[in-house]
Image 1 (cartoon, rainbow, N blue to C red):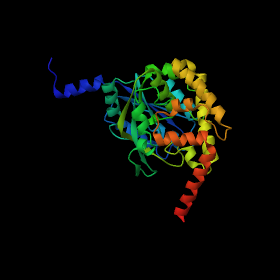
Image 2: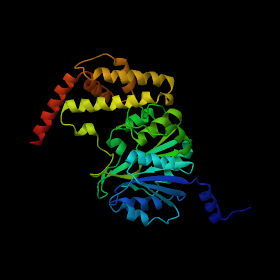
Image 3: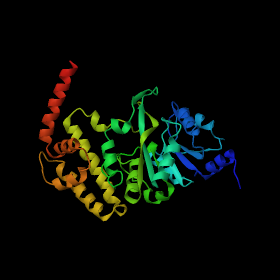
Image 4: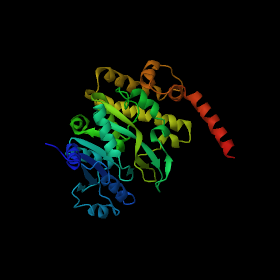
Length: 341
């Protein structure tokens, strides 16, 4: 049978997998419609948007109701506020098709986001693909062309992409950029509970890196909007600290919680990392009250050897030589004040 050009294009579309787009909403009236429209206007058309609203108190529900009868939109309204982690977990439990993507309520998806990410997944035969982002402000004006370079993540991504270290020590995968396979959700769910620092996207990335293959598309596919109400974003808690002691406290607090969660989920890890999880947990508990300690150097090296040399040295000083760290921090703080005068 000879197909016409039109029929061949139709056949190509039919062969595309349907992708579930998971959109968690909560008081998102300001940017929600623009985001939904950017998803519906993708060049890749075989999609279903699954929305879960977490008891919004603003105009979000009214906006969602305008899409209630859209053939590509399915909406759930929660009866009690779950919080954003549990709201995303609900959505992950309701994935219907083989592939899914995560979606924030306040970004803008570039028109070829799904098409390019899906193509990368096919090319690399990957279980999860993530991409770069472009940072924009509340008005949508560009603040940084590359989120991963702005946040100094690109070195770690390039060095650990094909290893289980990509998400092991820090979060390098931004959730709103991922395309992943439903088949892996039985390992990912339920999400860890009672944790401030391990969120849904970092857990998805970690578990997938331990059991499957991850690929990276080094170009922005999302306009990543930063504003006063972001749940997560381009800032870091440690950057906002005014005193060295606060910075060190946050560093250790994050890592203690990280490895506590890992040791609680040891069944997910290969034997070598199970051992490292236990040692790392003990290491951060050991150094917390210390003014100076070189114990556990080998553990520190195993954890940070994939970082840049400057990051490796700086973090060692912060964690293991806090007296020197505070001295250097105060000098830097003083020089900064002089420049501002």
